[in-house]
Length: 295
Image 1 (cartoon, rainbow, N blue to C red):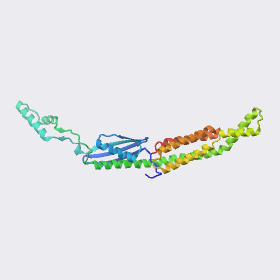
Image 2: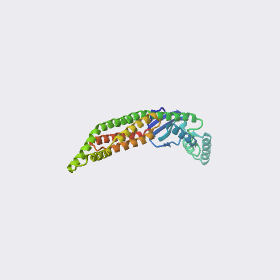
Image 3: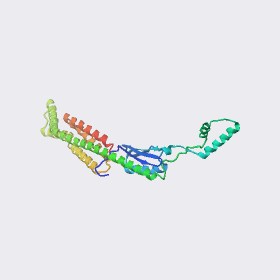
Image 4: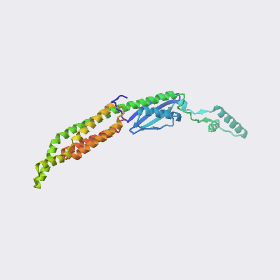
């Protein structure tokens, strides 16, 4: 897989193989998951091949809830039951002899129908559909189905990439809007403090007043949060572009982005910034939902 080409954990792949006895179909369906949770949903796969198939899937699909299906469509020849003719003839001969001895007249078709119900006349032995003789053909179909699943995941990954990166850019644009309110916000906070002091008819020492004002305004300062949020957004973009399987790491980065956005909201003390923070949270939540499906 190329760096910068992310994959979705949602996928589907299918391949078919023609055997002497009929057509076998391999299907894989994948959803998001923290590990490779592989479910073999077929009795047709021999037990001695199951570990090999699990390893193939884990090596190529890496992570997710993965369901593996094998179905078989028999051709006309293999579907027909095998009749043990020599045994049937012997049963028929004995019944005919007994009927003649007892003087019983019976229809030949009735005799034959009776014979076919006797033990072992019809061979119901289940033959292994997948065996050592045809395993090479089946294995090739399994590999093809896995590759097709990866192709599907890559196509889904393109849409995922466009969505989450556009939303990260939206957060950065919203951050620019926050900065545009910053001067107004500080002036508003300062005016509120001055108004409160005036209403109390206090005449504080001017230098002390300025010190207290600076201290109070520093409690509402969001410059560090803005810087860290931009750094986290950059780290998100670097990770999604620079790593083959960035899904888990992106989850941690999103947590840090959320922390800075929440702190900005709690410190803002400004209606306009609060509205922008709500929009940021909405974008981040959509990024979080989508990133859970990134491999």
